[in-house]
Every structure is written in structure tokens, then in C-alpha cells.
Image (cartoon, rainbow, N blue to C red; front, side, top):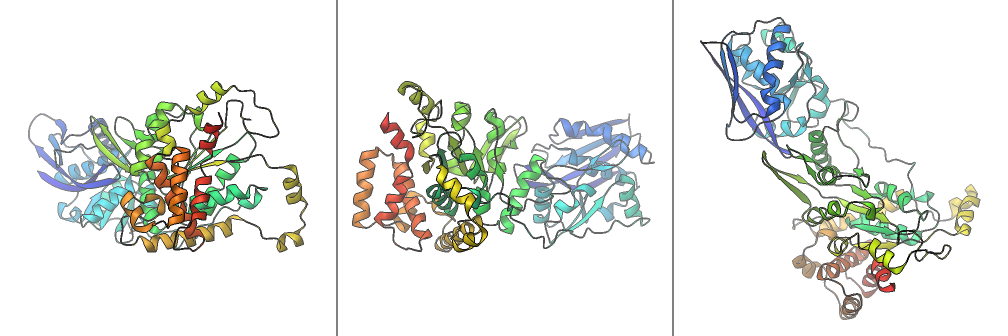
Length: 520
């Protein structure tokens, strides 16, 4: 007795179709799973046996062999429980095999036969759809998440017995209808830049960073507003496209960070890990590679508060994803690649006591202490951060003026709130998307040296300014290119096709850490 059931296997954020072959033959009762199953798949034997029996069906006293084809690739995950159980029940005649050929099956089984939620269902469904499968039976708890894909039919099941009854014609499992179709994404209004008193230069810098996804380091004493402004950064980023939402949701699905209430990621991620984070949690890893914070921040913001407090070894791991926009993790069980196209936003104090350069507080640190503190961030990593923004504490007059404005006066004065800033950012991004429509990039921050020559030509005055800055600041080639890319973004913000000397001058000004080093 033989049957074939279709399912899928995850490899990074992608998936492939897996054929679950079941053979029942005479002999001493045995239950073997072959085809490079991992521990979770091997342990499924006991779950499946108990689920079938407790659902009211007889478990066959035969020699059972399960092959997960193709047999040469590693299989992992509890979602193989359901297809293996259906394969066994099809082999003994409880389910007609010809009825299951149009379906794929995904789901974890409880001992009582309940079909439980699984991780990674969205990439699994997309992979099966790409293989031409349009009907999928999966857990009820994963239905809304899987319904993000429009051109397939999702049949949610809550119990193994319901699936058997469905194929017998005694009970109909209806195709799932998406609940959140046309859902409106509301931008949070409790995190607005209008709440920030003063700091107009910093707001301008963060707006430029948002316009082309430039990496930013905020440097300033305690209480200057670094964290406050960082948390408002998502409010000025453009809304995600459907394709971006789908790709981010795939990552969160694999990581197990989706829920029934939030089956799809609708807004740009903002991840803020603690400085005690490990390398595998930041970059991704584990025995079976899983996405880390850099991938969970895909198309969004990764905020590292108090950057020098992070382990230097962990910070050095950021260098490759910042450059390549992806992470490749190799383990003995296989290799997985996860996208990591994020904007790095970090903050730090200028010295251990926090008050170096503060006009209102005296710094108690020695030059050696300050150098040691700053050296916790390596030069190669600093080179990959486009903008170093120095922040000074807001003056009392600015706070008092902001609090003292009455409503009528506020209407007359131009307020730089997040809504206005986001509209300007969206306009600048649209210019970039149109400019690079024939290239493999979308934003200025992604420009390669070859594309810089093509799209960032400098006039004579701008070249002289760039040469003077390069020699005086002892810039690396990477820092030189980043300044030009920032100049391109500033020009786009102003609607200028040509990069002028004033645009480069502003870009050079966003290298405050170089000034701090020279002052020591």
C-alpha cells in the first residue's frame, strides 16, 4: 500500500515542494522516516500515532516507511506531522488518494488530533504556489497569515477528524475568506517630531537619512533627545509596498513572531535590541539558522542605543550585512540566506561621563578615557555609517517657547511635524525610484562606485571642495563615496538635478565624529 502527499520544506526565507511518500508493507510493526529528517520530524512518529488513535481511527500494525523526497535535502519542522498522518490514512484506505492529489498539507498535530499553528507558513505557501499548487490545507490559526497570497485557496482545519470527514463528504471545510482585505494602516500619532523642541538641524539630518536609507549615528550628552528622536524615525518613513510587506512578513513568520491578531506586518519594522544581545541573536543563527534582528529590521530601522556598550565582537558582525544587505549563515545542517536591507540608527555619548563638548556641564574624562571609549567602535564599522550627527542639549528658551505657544499662534507658525517630513521624504524617494528604475537599486545609499560616476557627476567647484575635505579629514574611499551619496540625496530633497558645492558642504558637516577625534 503506497501513497503520495504534497507538502513543503523551508530553506532560509524560501521553500521547496516535498513529496511525502508512504509505504505500508507486511512484517513486524515499525515506523521509519527517511529523507534527511531532523529531530522534530523524527519525533513526529509518536505524535502522529497518538493523534490517529485519539481521533477514533485504527493505527495500522504494519511496517511503515515514510520518505521525504527529494531525499538529499534536510527536512525540519513540525509542519510535516499532518502530511505524514494523511499519507498513512490514505495508504490504509481511510482517505481516497485521488482526492488528496489536488491539495498540499501543512500542520502540527497534538496528541488528541488537533491541528496546531506552525511557523513559516507564509514562505511555505508561496513556495507551493510557485510549484502550481492552488489548494492547501493548514491550521486554522495560520489561515489569516496564509491568506495574504491572493491566487490560492486556503482550507483551514482545526482537527484531523475534520479533514477525514471533508474528504469523505460528511463535513465541508470551506475555503478561507480574508478578513483584513483593504485594511488601512494607521501611522502612530503619539510619536511625532513636533513633540521635539528645537533640534531643527538634527531633524533635517534625520529627514535626509530617511529619504535614502542612510545609516546614522547620533552623538550627544544624556538628555539631548537622541532616543526621543530615534523612536520617531518610523513616522517619517514611507509606507511599505505590498511586496515589501510580504517579504518582511515571511521573515517574521519564520521567526515565529506573528500572531492571530497581527498575521501580516503592515508598517516598517523598528527593532531596538538591548546592548547585551548576542551575535547570533543580532545577525541570526542557531543550530537550524533563524533570522536575527538585522533581518527582522528588513525595510525598516535597527536602533542600537548606547552603541559603545555593545560587545565589540558583536558590532563587527554588522559590517557584512551593512555592505551586502543580506546575511548568509552556514551551519552543519545547511546554509540559509536572509535579507537584511535595514537602516542602522545608533546613538552614543561622546565620552564615558557623557559631557564632552557640552557647554553646560564639565567633562571629567581624560583624553585617554575618551579615546578608549570611542575606540570601542572600530574604524571599518564607522566608515559604514554615513552620517555622524552631533546633538547639543536644547536650551530652556526653546522649551519655554514651545510650551508657551497658544493654539492660534501654533496655526500661524510652520510646524515641522512628522506628516510634513514624511511627505517630503516620499517625494525624494520617488525621484530616486524613477532615476534607478533600470538599475538593481532603489535609493542613493545603495549606489555602487560605478553608479556614482554615472549619476553623481560633480562640477569643478564641488570637486575642489571634495578634494579639500578628503585630505583634511583623512577620509577613506568608502567615506568619500558616502559623502557624495549624501550630497545626491540632499540635492534630491531640494529638487536639484545637479549636485552643488552647498550640497556636499552639508554632507561633509554630517561627520561630527571626525571633529571629535581631531579635537583630542
